[in-house]
Image 1: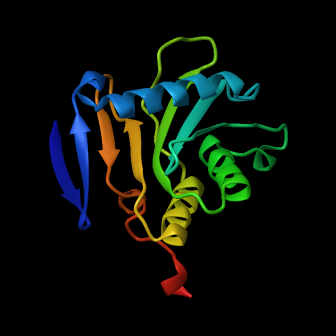
Image 2: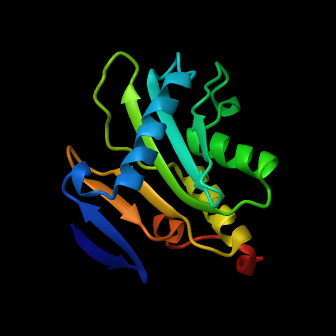
Image 3: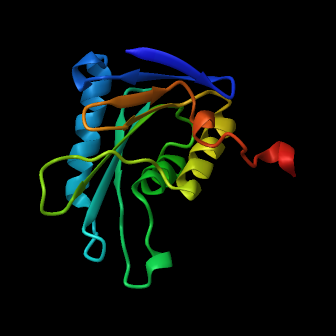
Length: 161
């Protein structure tokens, strides 16, 4: 385990999933399970997300594609918009993401797209509290951020308006 700082935000890199706290491993399993509900007949790339709320509730999301590509939605936004609609007063504590190819069992390194990073940052700003983010970064390595801000260092937020 190695903690690093980038743009005044810290993250920790783990060389094995086993180094992660048990609570994080459980959240990752929820993200993996969320991949099963992915609708991805075009890319065959299944993405699942698990969001831990302040109450302890876990909300899942998966990518939902459409033949008209811009009409689909990423797993992160599916989960976060569900939280905003159904649990508007709950704080989001953590987000974990997992991804794999449809016909394979191995999970792959994945990072959120720019739109998802912006939505995560907006969620963090809205609740005025950082959200931890967990993602696979290599064959056996994992990154855990202390805030979503590190994922979008030159971000656009309310202070930009």
